Image (cartoon, rainbow, N blue to C red):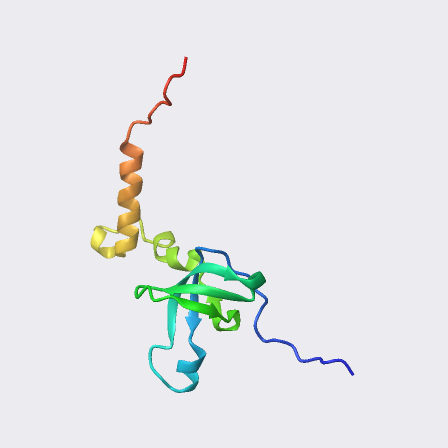
Length: 121
């Protein structure tokens, strides 16, 4: 009879530079605090079986991290406060700092004169 046990985790492949949530299984199962943290994928090892990660902000590398203990951190989640910022508020204090920063950047870009490419002729 074939083995019918299925994994409860989706088959996800990660890319270099992607942000993930990583849970250190040894720290988790021994009840230690600080077992889950945000990391950046630095290297894909041996055909995507394991990954080298850099925890943020510590920077101490984790080698050969098992992807079963990783979850993707989609950009849409990080940008949700900007995407849902109320644009009709009376003051900037009513918006999140990220939304204010994004709007300031957009205003600076919009007011800048477009530059022409150098003439090669």
